[in-house]
Length: 254
Image 1: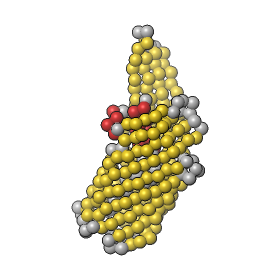
Image 2 (image 1 turned 120 degrees about the vertical axis):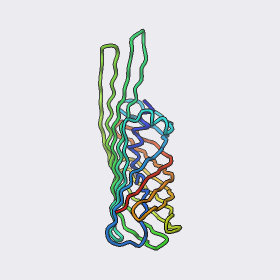
Image 3 (image 1 turned 120 degrees about the horizontal axis):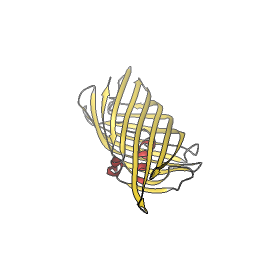
Image 4 (image 1 turned 90 degrees about the vertical axis):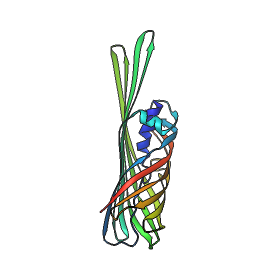
């Protein structure tokens, strides 16, 4: 079941801060600018998780390839809208995984299956505190929401039992995002945020760095590395993990 929870946590903490805002807005623009960035994140997971409040806490240390073994479906998209110095940013992630195990005890076939569906959304408002041709700096503040659904099915011969739990939490988050335009086509992004503050999770934080290339005024591509961490413990549920891996996305700008 550990490899399933790697996939589940990929979405849950993919939260945690602005998932992959690998967009490339040029400095100095005024008026509305809207960007849509579908992206992928090849993250591995290390930490402790407890899928059920009455279940044990499990230590996980999985590579991204382990996550793919149990993946049913996943989607990641980053959205932003900016007017002059003001902006609204959102990141939405969904993942569905299944971990199925088979064994036999006294010639009786046993099957265990854990299905996890997880949705995470982060929405933040921001203000561009520095706006220069070569460098921009945005201050961001908002919240992140997680919803997790777990269903376990156990079968022994003709007998089948099922059990499920759902739980959610939300955290306040603040952050900074900086762009440095090296040329009119090439730029770098540095982003960091922190949240939780003991309100729901004890703490969450993220750092992200990307290199960005603008093909046209409407299409750009970015690639880099991201680390996300969270420590959530409530009512028997434990999500104390760190995810890290390469990230890449394509931005469509309108």
